[in-house]
Image (cartoon, rainbow, N blue to C red):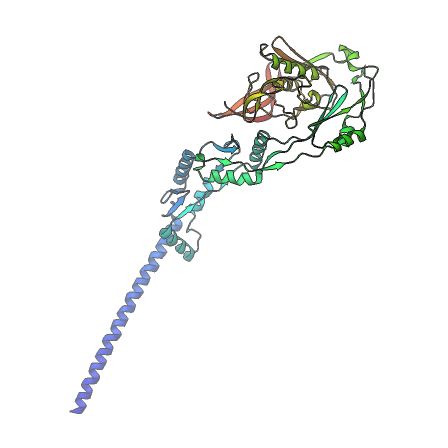
Length: 500
């Protein structure tokens, strides 16, 4: 009997162990099946993902959902959405003045194609585990790709430099000019400079955030200090030995007269050192006149009219007309030798009450106001067009903030004493002589010299690039014609004007 009980107990234990082993076995089989399904599914995902023609779910580009789209569909959608939200300019502010940076002119745009390519290639690296991990991560948390902003850094820098020249409190370097028997040296004045390296990222960040149109960017500035007056450099520049003028016909050549000019350098330094804060200093000049001048040579020395240009003015504005005549009288008769650079500010001099200039309308501080010497930019503009027609090389020229009444956009040249000059170089083989007159409502510049066999009819052609309710952008070209037929065109400038 005891043996039987023992046998029965062993049998129950064996059955229990058998059932337990079967459960484990079944469990392992189920686990293996699940793992197999997961592996199979993962492999299927991997193959499908690698061969998919669309972007995976959970992908955004600049907040725009591109999930399930082809590359072309995503490109079209993102381009349309961004274009509809972007505005055409950034608005900058300094004190009470506003300035605009044109997005198109600085070539700013988002690299949408690169962003779409990046989105399309997500979870498609070719590494099974890496792709699977990235795919699941994007599904769970989403990803928003920020397109790279590309722009023309040189154009942006140039644009900000132009804005800097139009700030209300501009830096003025020391300058000098000759007023009859005196050398007038003007002291420099501190001014505001734009922190361009600081402003650039502010502008780019504003463009990157396409809600920028609702805000202004305050222009960061710093104080710019003028260079100290260099009396020795001024002396080296104006000192001349007296020389007689003459010309030859075979070969043709004109040699301008030179008036001997000198001044006491040490005395000038002493005057400036004793009064360093004065606005200007008057230094007596010693002249030695030549016996024969260019004017004594007569028309034979400058036989041909190379170019002529005129602008109209209102004779009823007496003070402005006075300013035009004063500026023109300084230019009239000026001879520019081959290779010589003509500076408008140096020839015309500072516009002062003592020099006879009157108050008239000028463009200043982003608007129109009355200022001493108002109107003389009409003479610089007239001269600019004439020297273009005479095929001179332009060294320095800036357009006005607004399109002036006497000139078309792209054909003007503004001047401001101490900061903005108009300069050109005589690149012809022979000297030229400028005749300037202001009479009967017409300001005229004639340029005389010697015509050669390869002359063109030259003028300025302009093209409007963009026009909005706030700004006008114009390109100008030097156009060469013969018998009315356009031969070639050279790009001159791209000018931006503020509209009234």
